[in-house]
Image 1 (cartoon, rainbow, N blue to C red):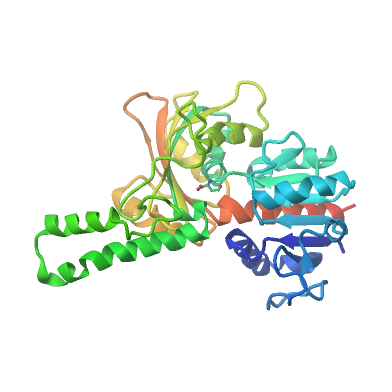
Image 2: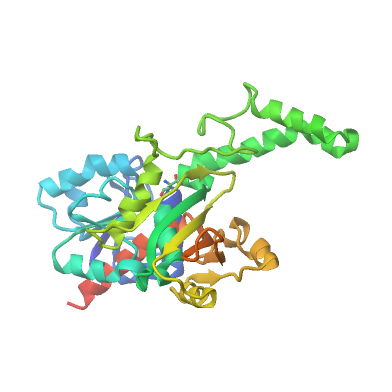
Length: 376
Ligand code: HSE
């Protein structure tokens, strides 16, 4: 059995990953070793799986790490920056699977999203690639939503306007969003109990609470509840945010397109939802295809698509974070031809940022590596 070491399994993405692995009985296929950056020597978590390590192993111990055939890190970019090159410098030849973005655009790494790029994964494996990195959540979720159109080479360009959940910013940000919601409610709860029927007055009180010194915003720096933030990740000083830059760069890396890249651009916006990212896409197709055919192609793109017909009731009830969070479905709807151009269509898509947006592609990559090893 191959030795697989896990780092960062206690964090948010790590926890979602482990939960999925237990659901799919993945742990029976290899020997598992659990590492910790802060609790080496302490007890293993209380899960019903078999641990090869008696106590947690030091995640900074390069010798211990190098005994693994595969390392799976959800520990974050800082850890990857510290540890990865030390391992490669001592000629560790194992596979490194990572949820962090640090190594994503490196030449000797592949961004993994196997429903889209299984052929590239196979080719990279055969050519000796050993670094496998999960993609940016909006990019992975978008590619899954439009996989049918991609497969048929129908896309000229994509504009993606995102509505990104708090989870993309981290667990503390999710907590802060809920605290902010509570603070706004507390500021007007008496009024809502029927003592004040003047909604403009109530709204003004809520606004004052959001903009007061006491409002909790140490993570987001500004209110997210009752608000939105039209910038995600660094300022690249060319008008684009790093999150927006990832759209085209990662899409084309995943699709292994070197020349004539598919153009992808748009604005990335954080909104007050918990863990599902939404995207309003405008696509320019390279052909004028009837809408019924477009619907079929999108709906049959992959087994996770939940296609929602472009009707008011279904869209309102099914095409939302409240319906999709916690599920592996990629909801896709609001598909219609835009009046601006016969070849332009709209799509609205919703996907869980922690599942297909983070944990699922790397969980499946581990499975792919284990299967490849077993078939040798
Ligand atoms: N960068 C994403 C976000 C999450 O901020 O929502 C990670 O892919």
